[in-house]
Length: 127
Image (cartoon, rainbow, N blue to C red; front, side, top):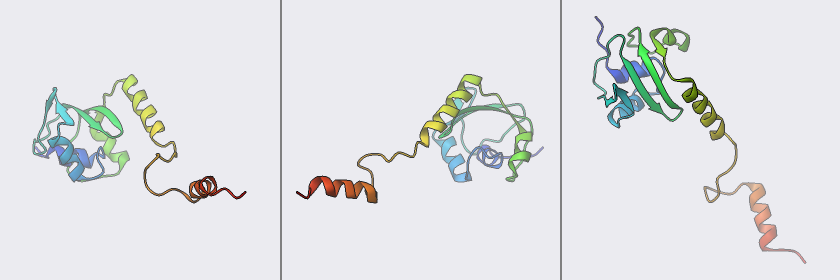
């Protein structure tokens, strides 16, 4: 039977963009098995259910196949079942939609050209 570390498995099924991020998530307690946090070196077994917390939201997956190399998304989804509750999926979609509002946060970074011109007009009015 193929033994694969949990961080490598989560990276290969495209739950995390890099293996380093997957290992960091495991070590910080964002990946859980039966409510207990797992180490990145834990081997993955079939039919285990993991709770994964990422920037995109919370997910629950059940392992139905083990792979150790990163594959295309269409191939990766054949190796796990997404058991995330519907209300959590809706919450994840809402969170993702609210993240990309294209509004600039105040007091962060340089002002845009338009903001700078408006500020100049306000500070130095031409009478």
